[in-house]
Image (cartoon, rainbow, N blue to C red; front, top):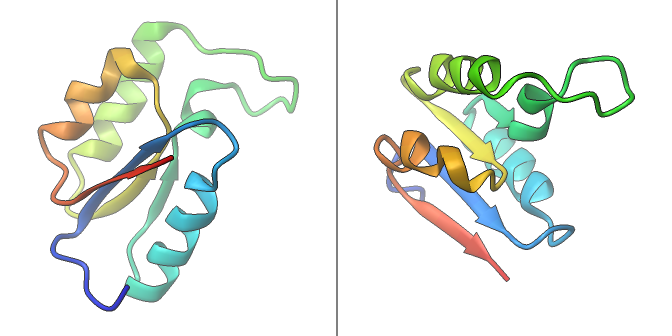
Length: 93
């Protein structure tokens, strides 16, 4: 990929297809902060303990409102939050 058309990139797709890897590469190449939704959804305990839906949505909204980001993850219930501000959208699979 030689060009990114925007600075809010949303990546969705099947599990284990490389969304996080693609996000990390795009973030590095274009100097855009990377947001992994799994890290927002779960408490930082290492045990995959989920936050409440309200807390997850609030954390996600804080990131979505930023000027630029590469965000990976599905979480269909909150896709409209991301899609409204995303510039390009990559769907893997």
